Length: 66
Image 1: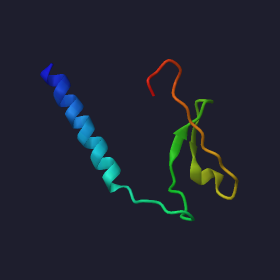
Image 2: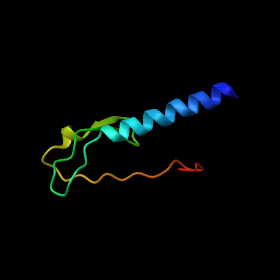
Image 3: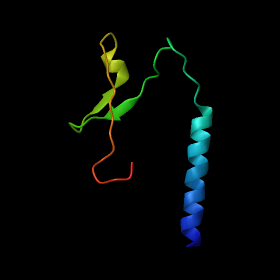
């Protein structure tokens, strides 16, 4: 039980610190480069699509709380 609480606390602190470091984007700012795994199983980078129209859509995995 103690290990579970410690693991949860460390994960929460990591998430909080990770979001605090990110700069806020304003309308008109260039999107930061990122990678996402597509439904085809391949990893796609935003920089590979430079000059093209891009729509990023996501949804929670079926039967999850997300």
